[in-house]
Amino acid sequence: MEAPNNSDVSTDDPKPQVIYRCKKCRRIVASAEQVVPHEPGEGQKCFKWKKRSDNPYKESPQCSSIFVEPMKWMEVVEEGSVEDKIQCLGCKARLGYFNWAGMQCNCGAWINPAFQLHKSRLDEGHL
Image (cartoon, rainbow, N blue to C red; front, side, top):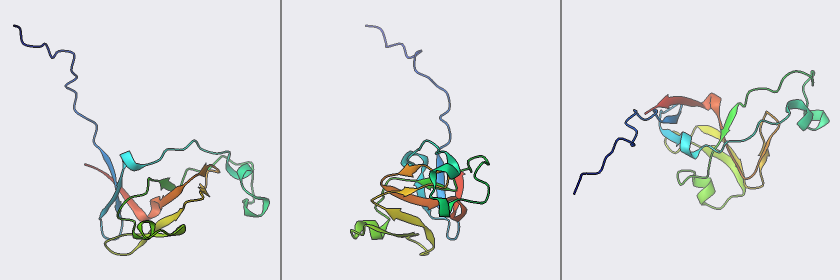
């Protein structure tokens, strides 16, 4: 009996995994696998009139947050809250906000349920 031919199996190096860390204490809070992708919205047109910026015709802004799946380290989620701040488990720094009813990204898209982590509070790295 012949040995199986493994020539069809790819031997390429896997892409490095993207991880997100708390900027303050460097604790890993999420990985790319837990990020919930969303289609960018139509920018300022998606917001109520009072929440729009001065120039509604400029391009849609880049998303300033990532949205993730609920995770066990999010204590307030585990406690059963409907909406609250998301704090780092290590240093208690505020990383974002969650709302089971959903929320709007700064690009205009609605995400439901929403577990938002602000990019300004995170460092993006690779494993």
